[in-house]
Length: 353
Image (cartoon, rainbow, N blue to C red; front, side):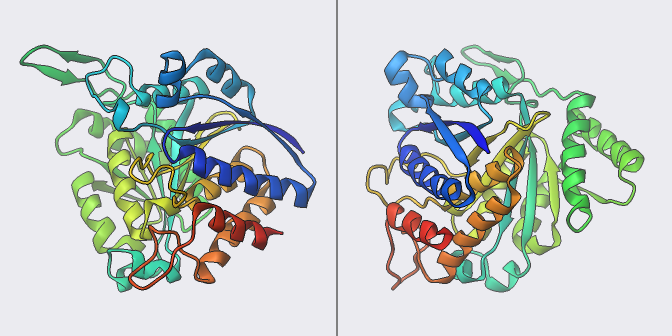
């Protein structure tokens, strides 16, 4: 098949991990007879520096005309002033809005070989296989904002249709897995959460009666993700809660550098990015872990391009190199040697070849 992929390297380690991912995709294309064309574009701090806009029109046009979008990372200390009128994160929010993606999928699987890299006790990690589904376009991040010298407010708003569509995405995933769905809210305090809980319960009862639904408060969810993570199958929650819980869940795997994400809407075109940030402290050193970016590319193959076998191959190659003992610096424990970004990508490509 032929596919046009917009590549947004972004800032700091973003270009390094994006380069690794496109090299892997080129290997997949050669192996399976596909042709992937890349459209590299600016976003975030790099775009601010170049044109004064974190999401330029050329970038927007390329993204909406592509079959899928790969994103490295945005942000860095030189653009970190929260009071600045133009910030890299604005580019990310505008990108999501332009692509009309509303469901962020973050799978968390524990590779046994990496249990020692996790701060969580190994016995708590056995059998952990979670997908967190985060709503992306509503909630407090997108509500009206006000600020004066001594007052500030952020409005949290959710509509019924926003809850229904994200719950349906999560329920379909749960139906294909263990049939368990955990909805996370703060219904004992927040009116938006009470709406969320009511709509979730009604949608599951009417459309997915075989799904086992559990409601849990966000503070309890944060505790149980550490205490009993293997009990969870699919979790669904609103924007801010999902932002926080997915970073917490990433530590189960030992490093944020291992974990991918997919942001999907009604169309097949999606946005794919590792869950880690731009890591300015290691930028330019060639030591960033590319596995989260590479497995994000695998999610792209599966969800946007319909290439499930190819996606399985990439994910199997990543698991194989970890089983062989290769570790980037973020994964290496005391006494273990580490490999560079390029060396990790080379090893994955070798397994694919």
